[in-house]
Amino acid sequence: MPVEYLRSLTASERTRQSNVHLGLSLCFIAGAINAGGFLAIGMYTSHMTGVVSSMADDLVLGKMALVQLGLISLVSFVSGAACSAVMINWARRRQSRHAYTMPLLLEAAMLLAFGLVDALQHGAGGTVVGLTAGLLCFIMGLQNAMITKISNAEIRTTHVTGLVTDIGIELGKLLYWNRASLGPPVMANRERLSLHLRLVGTFFLGGLIGALGFQHAGYVATLPLALALAALSSLQFLPVRATEAAPR
Image (tube, rainbow, N blue to C red; front, side, top):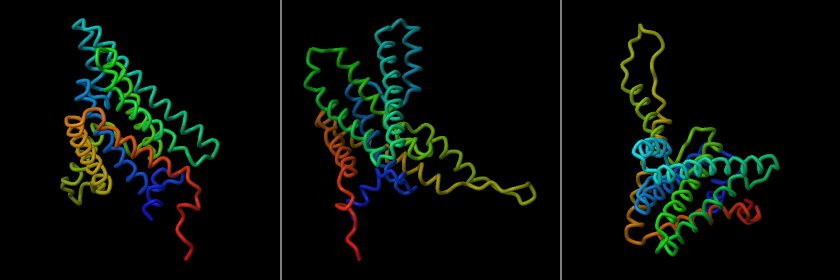
């Protein structure tokens, strides 16, 4: 039963439940990567709003090295999203059941690479900072594009600005006082509100665990995340009969 459930998270046949549960899992991972990345290189890599704003500020201040770092981050995020779209569309056109496992396997491999950066950082200086920023931004773009395509843009996992905005909108609807004589009532989407609250909470929890792990273990703290993603993705490559429930 646990294997069947885990396999359903990356199956090509989607349900809303599998989308939500996969989204929550990836939100945790994104929060951990984002917080750990900040402790590693002093910048967040999951949202491009801050990156683009920082590029503008740094350009005005003449900090060209930071402008270059921001450009690397932006291009890497876009490249990750594009790579995810290519892999998913390639698999969908061939009716492959690995449409969503390939981006996750690539993410796992890149997290493993991030975990090994610690061995390269001594004496490398800004080179490793740029490499790390590009790697993490690529991962974030890859992941966000994948869950966006899976859920038809209902779920995002790498940044919470949109989620918090939607939470505010639904809370406004929930608190609105409807007067019967003023047209159709304003009704909150409680299911959507609950989902977005859980996504934000999971992102925060992932960030907390990621920061603690990186603080105490360094880059190696990302290895359990990479191994978990690799294990989750690998289930789709097992023969179907190996994970099917026994006939009744």
